[in-house]
Length: 220
Image 1 (cartoon, helix red, strand yellow):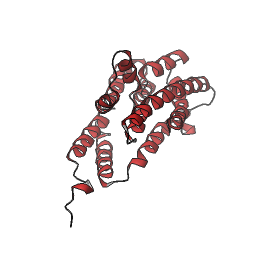
Image 2: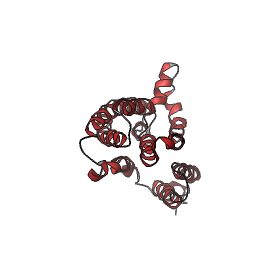
Image 3: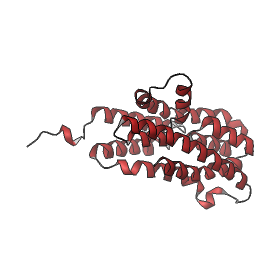
Image 4: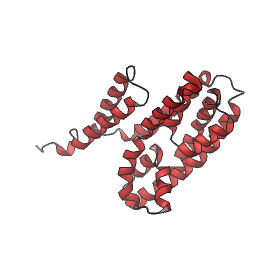
């Protein structure tokens, strides 16, 4: 599962590399951004704003990327008790705390499998993502407009693929539906990144109350 997720994520890393160079970043700027930021949503937001506003939009791009990256802090709260990492391992786990590593880890039932799922998935995604970012950056100048190939939608499609298998219960469906509604309604009027934060807060509130869990219903 970890290798499969890593490979799939790496494949849409090609789209980031291509979009980044199309936005005006060179090969090495693109690669350093991918290695250090290592958060697909934040990276796409950054290059998207740079593409629209040029160098003058760098400040807005940084803030928007940071807002989208805040979600990884929520993931860290969930994963920290599981990993119990200290020292250098804690720094490394912080870098690898992303959508995919958290999704695979939390899908496991046993703590040992959760730990393995986190580290293996994080490592696989890091290797494949950065490798394919490099390939995409090289190809970016030869394939024309990445949007004409549908590469701008690849990240969202891959994330939906990770989320879909978890929508088997009413509680998960309720959380996803409400968060989706908040994000769609607020996107036209709020700065880039803020709708995602609001949707995340809604998901936390609904998830905390657990209102739609079948186990909470009285037995007949």
